[in-house]
Image (tube, rainbow, N blue to C red; front, side, top):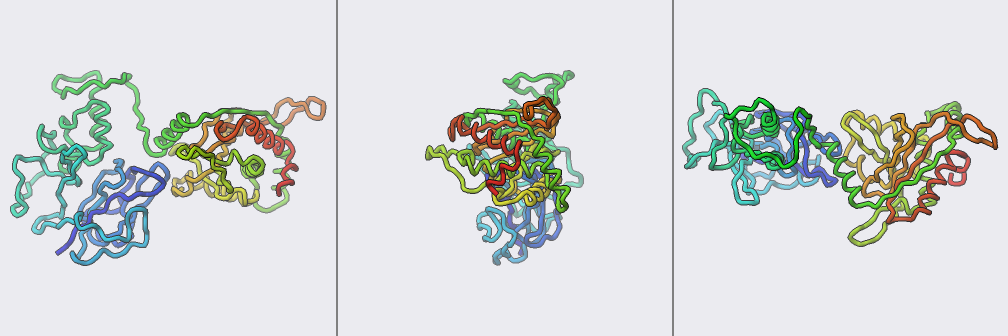
Length: 461
């Protein structure tokens, strides 16, 4: 007799709590092998293909494409052949699953004698109410039908009806419940568009749009008016995925870090000449970002206070002995900050190659969570947007960020005479808990000196 194992969305690491289903790679009824990717999800860090640790036949999928699921919620069920045998070990392990036997309490049996295998069951919320734990949700009834006497399948599937006043509300995702609750929407008044009336996020969003339309009729369900004012005809853009993660991190930085900013203009003419000479000498091209990164690591060696973070629980400043340099990259998915590991140990050529690799991965959405976390200092070249200056927000939990504006010809006093030089504005935002203005100013001045006279770097080579 076949045994049904439930595969839940695993912990993808780096503190991620949810993921959005981008694309299913298998259908119900497909045969899958151990470690075969079954779904592509997008987290706040990257796009990830999730492999299934079980081999067998897919009996159910939970969640439509575009649905956000919290870690630990069901992804799919797989019917395996031997009920007593342990599931085959998985080599492609993510945090939280892969090589352990599935707990006995989570195993479900496949009903025989029906056209499709489906696992029906409920899970309890914290408040004690029962909610559907699978994509196929049975319509609530006064008396549950015994398992030994399944109802015959209807010839045609009826249109889903709104949830009754009694019984479970057919909602899987707590994100859907929160969206409805925050907007004062009664889920029992909705007819779900998912399998067997499952209420999806799209159903809630459609109901909210209908509620704010000017031509509402009295026949529509009455819902509670949200406390926050809403503008008619506006566009609501969910803060989720990368944009949501960036919003959370920037908000946390502003709440927790007492930051300050200092800036200085620098003559970058000699730096640009040095780069042109390097590239004219042959070999791989050296990027300007790589030279700025080399300047950053040399300056951090002089001012290690800025390569640190604050341990709030221990009330300690932790200075780090390695530099994992993050750099801001704008992509179609939003702003991401890939990290160059051990940037202090790389030369300009190695930095150029790594920046190019990570930038391409950012554009194609193939950065891994490990390539987007663990930075100790961030370099933000916002000059590519054609602006001169900015006040960067520190990339929490780091202690500082160096911003670089555009390099453009400007009048400048050079060797006592007015001349046209290539000028750039540099800005440093820093956590005032890790150092005072003298240290921050010293760091920024050393960066400016290296920009103006690249030969200063020879001291640290």
